[in-house]
Length: 178
Image 1 (cartoon, rainbow, N blue to C red):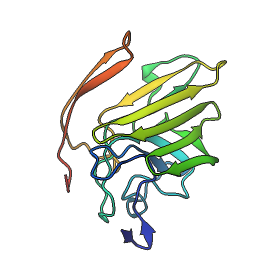
Image 2 (image 1 turned 90 degrees about the horizontal axis):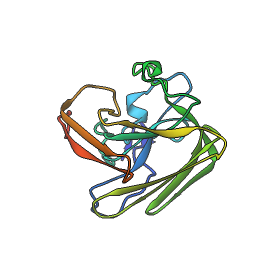
Image 3 (image 1 turned 60 degrees about the horizontal axis):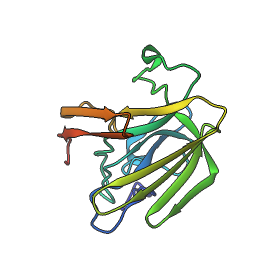
């Protein structure tokens, strides 16, 4: 859909009638998310990635969903107290010249040191993160992140099995349209 002359189709990976629409949610340099530019979570002119999220509405003309965020984290030491949810201190600049969007696949380089590659199946979204060998890195999982930043989560449970490299859980969201 085109609300306010702006399309609202996220460019990330999805398949027809698939559950997951794995796509980046973006913002501009001043950490301002203008709702009508981000109905699908992504606005082409933005230069910062807020997170890769799994559920997006397409063409709705309204901001909703964008939940279960995953973000590459590039920092020498991880200190949970340095994460500021009000300013989204984890955001990374996107290299727009390295952005690729084709049916079922999306890729971009963020923060000069991490490559994000996304694909989707009928039920899931698949992520691949490639980091610079000389940079300490990890993944920041943001299960309660939403496109418009509201707190519409009724239930969030997350379990991480680091030995198997798997994270799984349950999230229940009650937003304006969902």
